[in-house]
Image 1 (spheres, helix red, strand yellow):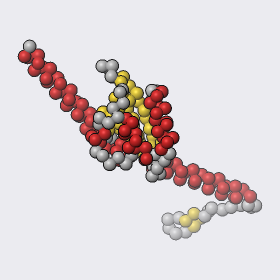
Image 2 (cartoon, rainbow, N blue to C red):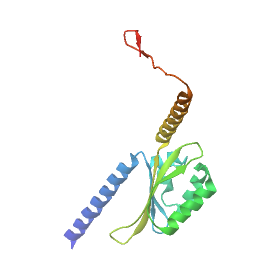
Image 3 (cartoon, helix red, strand yellow):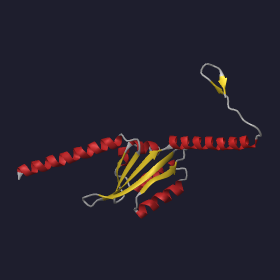
Image 4 (cartoon, rainbow, N blue to C red):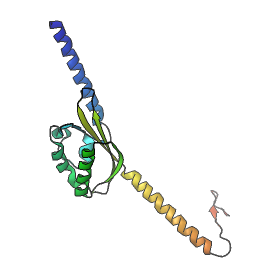
Amino acid sequence: ARERTGREQVSVEATRAALQRSYDVLDHLYCGVLLVSGDGVVEYANPAFCAQFGVADAPGALVGLTAAKVLEKIRGAYREPDAAVERILDIVGKGEPVIGEEVALRDGRTCLRDFVPFQASRGDRGRLWLHTDITERKRAEETMRERVELQDRLAKVASTVPGMIFSFRLRPDGSSGL
């Protein structure tokens, strides 16, 4: 029996080490990660989650809090806090996956939100929230949209001008050509 207890202890330690290694990996992700148990208690948050939502607490300080308390901590980060809270409660209530939902933040940033409800092999339930900052991508899309609009306007003007319009190009040697 003593040997079995020793094996069980090794197994528990290996499981803890694997779990810690998983958390270490999640700590280094650029997207915000929040893991909530089936009974609504935060099991894990990474530094990116705290940074994205302006949470001054260390990620470990969120562990053990109810999801409702964490929601109160982050609600001010949303551009429309009441609507955001209502949407989050709706998502949790439905319990269906949500992938790539855009979320507007108060400071002008935009995130993609993924919600992943799950049931672990032991029967435990939980939910995983992922928030990926796509602000730069949104800005690039807006710049591209503005350029296309400008090009369309210029094409309309050019189509109303009688005659021919020439395009001059400056060559590397300094001369110009058509």
